[in-house]
Every structure is written in structure tokens, then in C-alpha cells.
Image (cartoon, rainbow, N blue to C red; front, side, top):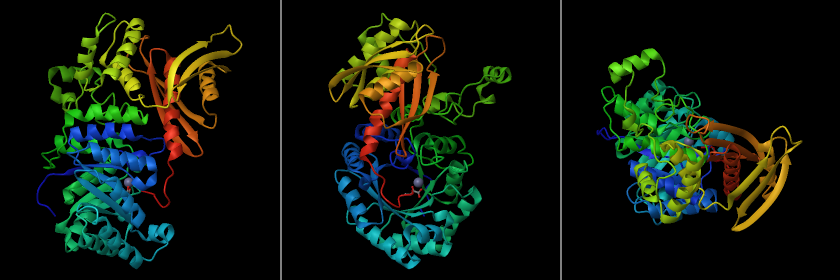
Amino acid sequence: MSTNNRVLIFDTTMRDGEQSPGASMNRDEKIRIAKALEEMGVDIIEAGFPIASQGDFEAVQAVAREITESVVCGLARAARADIDRAGEALKPAKRKRIHTFLAVSPLHMRVKLQMEPDAVYQMVIDSVTRARNYTDDVEWSGEDATRSDHDFLCRCVEAAINAGARTVNIPDTVGYTVPDEYHALIKMLKNRVPNIDKAVISVHCHNDLGLAVANSLAAVQAGARQVECTINGLGERAGNCAMEEVVMSLRTRKDHMPYTTGIKTELITGTSRLVSTITGFPVQPNKAIVGANAFAHESGIHQDGMLKDKNTYEIMTPESVGLRKSSLVMGKLSGRAAFRAKLVELGYELGDNAVNDAFKRFKDLADKKREVFDEDIIALVDDTVMRENDRIKFVSLEVICGTKVARQSAELELEIDGVIKSTKAVGDGPVDATFNAIKQLTTDTQHLQIYQVHAVTGGTDAQAEVTVRLEENGKTVMGQGADADTLVASARAYINALNKLLVKREKSAPAAMSA
Ligand code: KIV
Ligand code: ZN
């Protein structure tokens, strides 16, 4: 094991994060997230699971082309076809890694793989050996390692390293372990696996008991030097270890944990917002580090203390995670140059077309809303720019509602694959009428599971940000939309989710992929 105290950050937002029910990202969205992760200083970006679908293959390939600083990684089961597909997708990468995994717990081997341990052992060797044909940088994971037999785990880890794995990952696949047990497991591997010093020990924790970050930190203290994590803790079931939490814990408590990462923490808030917008997963207000309330002090006692000395109630500064004071931007007289400058200040690098589209929406908003804040600009730009390549686009909406009509009605125009289509529909309420109109122009096979509205800023003229979750044949997607008009925001959110469903319809999860 390396004696240095640098912890590698392996981001799996676009692979394990994308496996969370409702999350899906298309190729362009993955490129956008990958660039943000690279800028943040992420060491390894797991861009996807190339054999999962043609779309994921192309997304990993596109990320491999775009990213030059971070290592780009693709996931593969222990099967030849998976490894070859990952190798193919990663071809354009300047720095590439194949991450191959196989279950090692008695339960998974018996029930899922239906294989004897000796056959699994041989497959570990074969899979790592095959992956080495494509790159020297191979990571091997023993799925469900925290419920494995220790002797068998040691044998597999040793064999993987002998076969050429440079990183050995010890996942807590089902979020079952607790910090002292996980610490002991990592120590045990360090003490018992003879060639362990030839590889980096990695940890990968799921959050089923809310312990993913605590377990990851305990593992680092035991000698792990790679942490696998996701932005906002996105991931299957209760999610994965949240990157922002693990990184800020190491930074804030370096007196207790003297380890460093290469993450530029000031970019955390922006990246969190980007992932939330792209996936449609809102961040809960009380979420550590990136929640809207994470740095808010409301009680009088706290406010008093903060005014006297910030250290009374603040263990890290909002600026250290890239959170700035909400500031008033422009009104309806503000020009294009000022708007462009504001976008740069907020961290957007947009082409001319995107700036023009966003500026038009800003002007519309400024006509309706007296004061436009940074948060408004962010919601509006995210809602405009992220939708650039959508197949279904919102054009216009007129809704008749109130107590004087028997049934509410909506007249809607959409652009579908470049063609403008319009329709009129009725419903039980204005939102129902709007969604019925969308269904008339698109598909009616999806079911609305969640509909939520929240205000982007304070005030009755605040923009509404709507989140919807749609379900179709067991697959779910989230969509978000923002607008000063709640019904327009609702339509935009539903359309955003439908676009994601189009992507999801093309993808089918491979068998035995329980990671
Ligand atoms: O949770 C898990 O075991 C995984 C592996 C593929 C690393 O995601
Ligand atoms: Zn996982």
C-alpha cells in the first residue's frame, strides 16, 4: 500500500449514479458532466457501462474523446464481450481504465452467478488478464465484498493483482457494513494479501444505512487510497458515498484525518447543480454541503453567534464549496453584454446560439419579474441550454382555468423532431389538461408518479421549478422545468422527463448487473 496521503477520487455519477431509478443521461449530458468533473480535479471518471446499450457505448466513447486530464473508465462484467466492448469504447481516451467486477460473496456466487468459488476465482484471473490487453490500468472489484468469506476474498484480491490489476476495489454493494468493521476488513487485506502493496485499495460504499461516507472515511484511515463516490450521493437505492461530503470531511477535519484530494472544492456547488438539473433529481434542502439550507442560519441564537464570530456555528465557509451570496442581477433594461458577463461569472461557457436563447428567456422573465436573481438566471439557463438536443421541445401553451369553466383546457404547441404540432385537451385541473395535451401529441404509455413544485427564490413573482417522475414498464425518469408561469414550468418538466424516457426506451439493463 502506498505510504502517501493522497486519496484518489473516483467518480461514478455517470455509471452507478445513473443506475438510480429515474436517473438517465444522454451522450451530451454525460460530456457536460464529465467536463465539470475534470475541471473539479476528479482523478478517475467512470463514464458508463459500455455493453449496457449502444447509447452508453457512444457516451463512454464521447467522454473518452473529450477528457484529457482525468482517467476515463468503463465498467465491464467478467465476461469477454463486456471487456472487449469497454476496451473498444475507451479506445480514444488519452488515459483509460477498464473496471471489471465479479461477485465474491457466498450468496451472490450461489444464487446470482450459480458458480462454485473455484470457477469464480479462475474468472477473476481471466477477466483481469483480458482487460490488460486493452490498458495497463485495470481495476478489479469483488462485488458484495463486505459479505464475503475473508479467506476467499484474500485469494481473489491476490489473484487479481497477480493478473495485472493496479486497483482492487472492495465494495460494500448493499450498504451493509459499519465503520469499524469496514476499517478492519481493509486492514485485514493489507495484512494478509502478500502483493497488496502492488495495488491501490479502493472503496465503494452504498448508503442503505446512511453510512456510506462514514464507512469510506474509516477505510481511508485503514489504508484505502481511492474512494468511489457520486455527486449528491446519487446512486442505486439509497445512493452512493457523496463526493462532496467525503471531500469536505477530509478537508475540514484534516487535523484528525491528514489526507488530501485533488478536488477544487469551490466547484462543488456548481457541479452539484449541474447533476441535479441533468438528472432531474432535486437536492434535499438539508443535504450536507450542497443542500439549500446547508449554510443557512435561522435561529436567533445562531444568527447572534454568527454576527459575533462565524466560527461559532460555521465549520467551513460557504465560499469554500463555491456558494456565493445571492445577488441581484439585472432588470429588463439590461443588455446582452451584461447578460453574457453574468453567465461567465456564474460559470457558464455557452456558444452564441445558447446565449441568444437564454437571453430571450431572460428578457421574457424580466418583463414579468421585477428583480432577477442569480438563482433565476441559473434555473433559466439550465432549463434552456440543457434541452438543446431534445427531440421534443416546448413551444407555447395557453390554459383556460378557474371556477367559471366546467373543465380546464390547454392549447399546446410542441416541436417534435423538428416539426411543429399543436393540440387542445381538457382535464381535471389546469395541470391535468396540460399533461393530457402533451400525451395527445406524444405517447400515453407513461404514468405520472410524482409532481412537485418549488419556488426558485422568495416572493409571489418567483419562478416555479417543477419536478415530475414518469414511470413506464418499471422504468422511471425524472424531469425538471422552470418558468415564471407554474403551468409552463409543469409542461417543461413533463417534456424533459419524456425526452429522458426516449433515451431510456433504447437502453436495457444487462443480466446479473446488480452493482
Ligand atoms: O456496488 C457495487 O458493487 C458496484 C461494483 C460494480 C463496483 O457498483
Ligand atoms: Zn455500486
